[in-house]
Image (tube, rainbow, N blue to C red; front, side, top):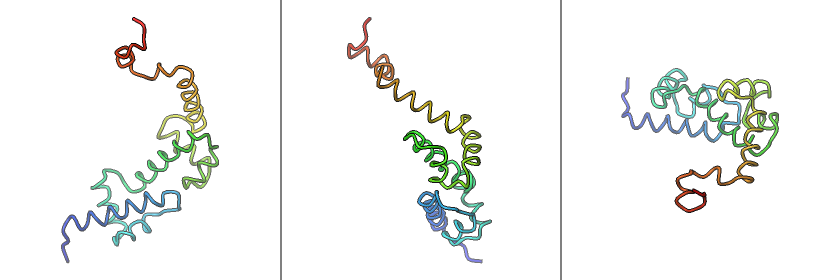
Length: 140
């Protein structure tokens, strides 16, 4: 059996991670991702988890949830977001989102909207007090 230098193996795993990053909204499975790195899915899974500390599926899911937060902040509907980030249904997206973030996607969108309104209405509330005080923006 041939032995490859670790940096060669790591480059192949990084290539697969970049493939996930670029194609997160597509229907991805472990075999297809592993193929981009020229590994069997079992060997790929083991190396990916060793390098990144999570499984490829866990990484993909976390990436999709982070992308969804940005889209929800743009006031897109849950259905639109689910479709844009690669979930099969808004129900499965909502369940995964809530499991990871502890809030429903619609509630998250509402929180972000409220926070934007608060920032417009009371911008000084979002500046650290010590900074605002040092600039003379707050009364003693």
